[in-house]
Length: 308
Image 1 (tube, helix red, strand yellow):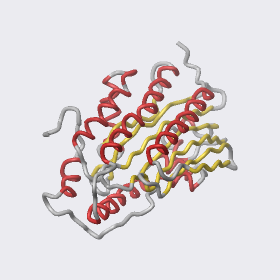
Image 2: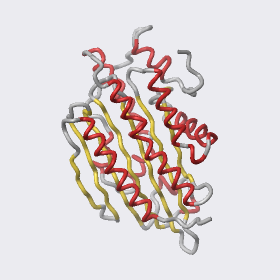
Image 3: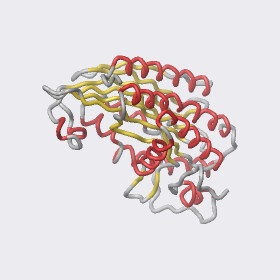
Image 4: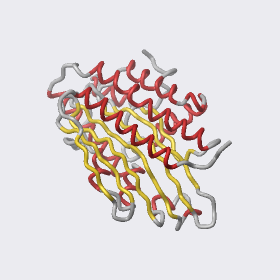
């Protein structure tokens, strides 16, 4: 069993994944395409950011590849792994957020990443992380079930126990503590994954990365032509506020990027173009807007615990 990490293989996979995702989503939009900007980080590394704005389908979306390194871990990483304090490090990943224009099409997020630290005089320490999650504004049970079934299939290389663990981890992670509510209907989340061999761990990361498009595209196609009006639009903008709050307060990738001197435009490209906050607003009982919080944003195993 070969446990030697191969950063070059991970790099090539991530570059290809970004290409495949932007090509597919650009074709799906049919209007605006992704524009690319390459960038370099003064402290080491760089990346390429691809952004779509004001499209026919996607109001804003970003698919970012980054490969950065440094001589010493930033506080956000070394705080949880004090034994790596002072180690040189290298991180690479693909991260994306897609904000559709139609409120009936959910926002989606996905990320797959690899991290390796090289403590002086010791073997490298490495792990994978990532996942994908869905944030609807108007919920559909069929979409939730399909999303989670695809997530379960993505974990097949590691077995159902891994899926249950990553599904629960996603619910726990994408929780807005100050609001006491979930950001969305969940999916997969994992971090610090180093189980079995490097190849086993890498295979699972690839399976999850490759499953994002099959999970999201059919839902987009099913909902993209649903009629909507100003009421649905304003509710979408209100709920986008929760997305902003999570990204700026809790998201590990955002905090790591800012603390490690990453490129601000690329780090914050996940934020929606339009958003609103209303003081102490509450949806009217019995409405689809109330049902989002009352039913769809309650953590559950969507493949077993639905009442429809």
